[in-house]
Image (cartoon, rainbow, N blue to C red; front, side, top):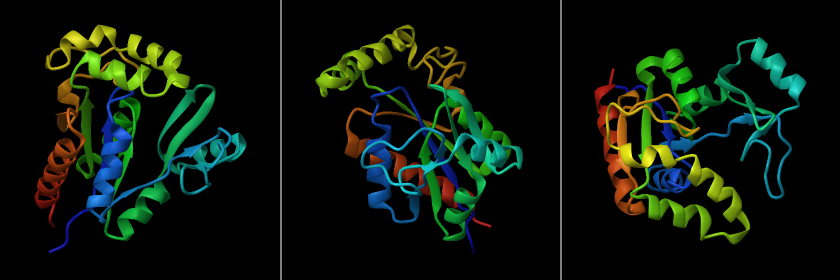
Length: 210
C-alpha cells in the first residue's frame, strides 16, 4: 500500500524554535524534506537561490501568481511578496517525501483550502514568557531591539496560550484559535519536542495510507 505524502506546516510566534524543530526533524527523518518558498526580496549574504528561497523579480512573481502557480502567497510582508510554488511542493511529493515549512496562519488557511487532508498543521508554543524573552532579546544582542518588538506583539496572548477559546493576536497566529491547528506542542526541550512531533507525523502518515 502507498501513503499520500503530506504538506506539514509549523506555525508559532518568533523565538519558539520553529527552524530548530524543522532542522531536527529533517535530520532524523529523510522522508521529511524542507522546501524553499519564493520571495521578491533580495538575497542576503550567504543565501543561495533554490536553497534558502526562490528569489524572483516582482514582475515574475506576479506573473506566476496570475497563472495560478502558487498554493499560497503573502501579498505584502515588509513590502516584499512571499509564496509557496505548487511545483516545488509537488516535486517533493514526487520523491515520496513529506514537504515541510514554517508559515504563518495566513498560509495555514490557504493550504487547508487548497489541500484539505494532505495538509497537516502544527502549532508550536513557547514554554513561558521568560523563556521566549530570553530567546528573542538575550541570545543575540544585535537583534535585541527587534526581539523586544516581537515579544511585545505576544503580550496579549501569554495568559491565554492554552485556552481553546482565545483568539490569538500576535502576527504569526492572528485570528486563529488552538483548534485551527491539527496538533499543538509546547517547545520546552528541543529533543523532546522533535520526537513528539515526529511521532505525531507517523500517526498522520498511517491514517493516510491508500
